[in-house]
Image (cartoon, rainbow, N blue to C red; front, side, top):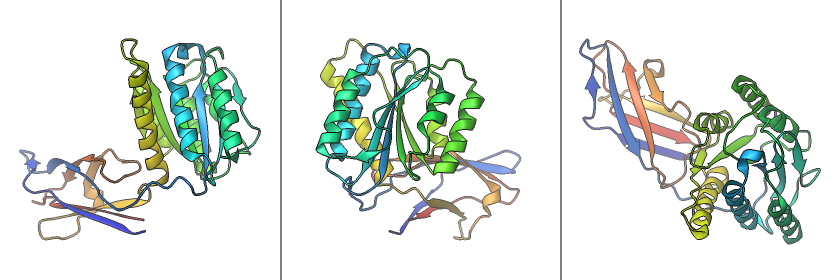
Length: 288
């Protein structure tokens, strides 16, 4: 499918006093007709942090989320696998299997049996061992953790993820669990994996139903991003006269917007580096 969205900015600009640049921040709400179809092909790998820090409500919340996702792909043409990790990994299947009712039921039993007894969280080893030759290219990874790291430097973790993503063309969607997860780690893993990060607070004063609803909603959003979103796209900027602005003059954040899904607003902050009296009056997102 082809997609093109143009958004006019209006008079929202603030120009620097020296006239050498101008900045703007805007929110767009993309809308395109694309329903979530989970019956097609594709491989989904669930990575569940089962280290000691995940005990109690943290791991219980993750279990509900993974089981929700498994039931969403049941009886489809998708394949899947489940990996628990800590100081080592524990794979449900040696290779991905079809999401039949029997295999999903077995996976549900495996997930429910997990306990937070797998030592520390060795992220580098977890990613290296999980992304072995059994994982097909273009797989989608759902990664669940509080981000509490042990035994690894962040640079080592990010280097391993980058290598795996490049080699396997993976997409990694992360779930930060708990009230004080490592936001930097969880977000950076999703950024390197060209995915998106969700954060699920877990509070003892909330009912089990509330926790299940939060993780289930996050799962459905991530499934939509993974299997029904705009992933390959480009941004173009235009002046008041509808002339294209050299992208070298435009700084914007976040630099990597991640997958764009219909009806979910995204915010883009721009800074135009030029001495000319230019203003960005329109942004265009084009992709397939």
